[in-house]
Image 1 (tube, helix red, strand yellow):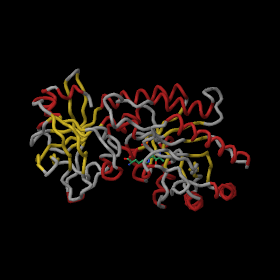
Image 2 (tube, helix red, strand yellow):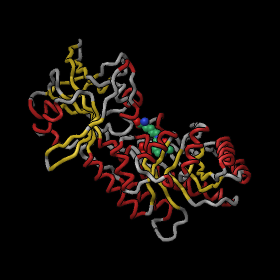
Image 3 (tube, helix red, strand yellow):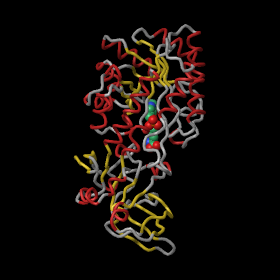
Image 4 (tube, protein in one colour):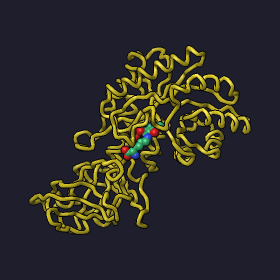
Length: 405
Ligand code: LLP
């Protein structure tokens, strides 16, 4: 979060907005995107933004205008990406359970590739493409059986996960592709998990496995022109102010060296990646107010007007997000106290943080729950019939915040 936000005139601008809401910093977002654009051209790696992380229109439009492709996981995401300016020939569509309707949407729009996750899916795509008189461009998602050292709900490349085609199906896959006349096989896809922090080790291993598996299929006579290594770069949830822009350089370098030995000339494969979280997480905060300061027997609770329905990551993954008391830091700074910060939803897991030290808080204080730009608003629900928290877009005119709704 940009500390300029704590300037009284800026805090005043936020005060009248009904909480909770998501506040997105467009300046930080543009800086993040510029860094990705720079590295994409430096290393010759194509970037497809993972729309599932945040489908906010200003984000999508800007990335589309910077030439990004999109990685989608539903027919609606494909349509949303196209509506917001992404070129269909840069859209990849993954997902283990695509409906016929979604497959047809992708085929009719001529996207870059349907990323197929099973043999039966390839057969169905072949049949539907035939009916439409089209040839379906596909990547095949491979399950490389790699441990991404991340939370078990967001690891996707282990043999026991539902994602991708595993080793025991490789021979059958080769035969099937030879039989599918309406399918144009373009290459392989890998995505091994999310919030990966052991960048060199995990992505280095992913590259080695990708090359091994690609060679295996080439030896069987398949031509592979594209390799998509998915997303997964982690962000610093503990100290977001120290690392507002994630270490993309390390990620791109690891992949470039892993796939081509760092050489850009005549690379064997066209390399793609699909970052989601790393682009938008640090650009968003969930802004909420303290409804009550409640004294328990051993604890003091800060009860906020935002709940797990607005941001489910703590309840679902035990994720921790830094919390800043915007009001206290800007105008009534004093002692600190230890709090359990909790939401209003009727579930015991509706907890933001336990036993954290914050400036002494009062009813009405505005809190920012940081690093909430990815998998926040998109995963919100109306549980308890609560309203959905809207987006507020923050830009800067020098030190002055400019808000749009
Ligand atoms: N490509 C594919 C095929 C994916 O499944 C995903 C994310 C991405 C790319 C983008 O990964 P990223 O760069 O964002 O790590 N809701 C969870 C994260 C779920 C990730 C799902 N797949 C969370 O809040 O941590």
